[in-house]
Each structure stands twice: as structure tokens, then as C-alpha cells.
Length: 276
Image (cartoon, rainbow, N blue to C red; front, side, top):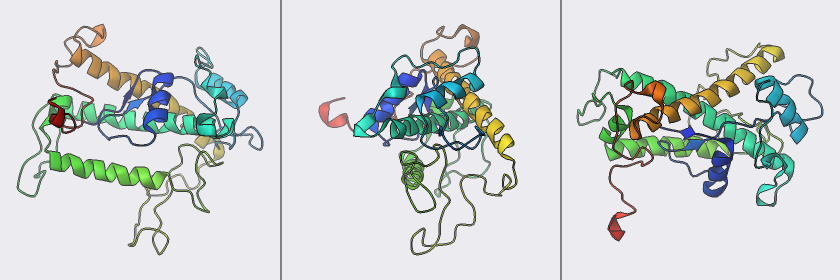
């Protein structure tokens, strides 16, 4: 149901710059074009995302990801220095933004397909017995979810976002030499979560523990390309729903939607005092 979308790399990067990390789960816009690699120096395998990358690394990775398109950066963001930080830190930020938005878009695409086919949990959605909505129009289904349920979703996302920004001795921030796209493990104890957390968000069952660097490199490239495709796909779905005929291939495939797909709530709480 959540709609994290994107059309172009520059647009997403602009959003990330202006809105920083304050993204609501149901409404982010994502990026897609120019990619990045990591670290120019001590890495021979591209799967082990190297640290402190440069524009040359991005150009090399772009060729690996899409030999036809290659490196595409019309706004020359690969040479930018956001917030007075170094170019390497800026590249780490942009790289992390693409990976994260690609992952969210993949969740959004799968969620859209699931809900469009009427698949839902058989038990009650809320403690008062309210069932999960039966709506098969995904944006309309999101509108049917109660505000209290949405706030729980947003609270979880806020926590995950907060945790992802932590920089610890075992996990460097992606703008300070860490790996973009790497999510820190949940740590229990005095310096972490005050209760046991048996599973991490990424690879909870440690299936990649013995994976070779070559395999990791291939999977990383696949994730980037799949994330880009998912961003374009979820945007295409919503574009056709809100502007019928805008995506000819989806004409008659997805139902029309006359709401606001970017609004987290049906009620405009911020605009109400001003008559909106």
C-alpha cells in the first residue's frame, strides 16, 4: 500500500536534500538513474561496496549496471558537495538514497500487486475487531486504513529511520566512510535496545554469512537494477490511476483513483486551520 516512488535521480536527490530524512512511509519519491560504487582505493571486487568513492567509481559501476545507458548525471551531482561536506560524503549520501528508495519501491510494488489481488490477513486488523479493508484499489485501500493504524506504521518507520542513521564503532555512517545501503544490526544492552532482539532487519537468518564476494557483487547490482525498475513501475501504476491514459500499457489494467496518492491521511490536518 505504501507508495514510495520516483521518476528521476535528480528529483529524488532534490527531495532528499530539502526534506532530509523526514520521509513518511506512505509517500516518498525515489530516484533512479545515476548510480554509484564505493571506494576507489582498496577494493578489487565491486560487490564489497568500497568506501570514499569518487565520480570515476560511479562511472565504472554505471557501465556494469547498464552498459547501454552508462553514466547519466545531467545535474552533475556526482561532483556536488552538499551541506559543506566533502564530495565523497555527498556521493555516499546520494548512493545511500538510491539504494534505500529502490528497496522501498520494491516493497511498494509487491504490496500493490498483493492488495490489487485482494490478498489480506484473515484476522482482525485492530483490537476493536475492525477487519483489514477488502478494497482492491491499493491507494483507496490505504485511504480506508484508520489514522490510528497509520500512526503505528509511521512510528515504526520513524524508529527504523532513526536506527539507520546511527554511527557506532561497528557501524560507520554512510557519509563518514560507511557502506551506503548497509543497515546496522539491532544491538541489545546498555548502549542499544533495552531488550533482546534475536533478528536483524537485514538477513535475519544469516543466510549470506558464507557468501562469496563475487556473489555479493552480483546481488548488489541486481538489487540496484531491480530497485530502479520498481520505482518506475510503482510510479507507472499510480500515474495511470490518477491520469487515465498516461501509461497506455496499463490502460484498463489498473482502476482509476481520484484521491491524493501522496497524502498520508484523507483528512488534511495541517491545512484544516487554513480552510483547506
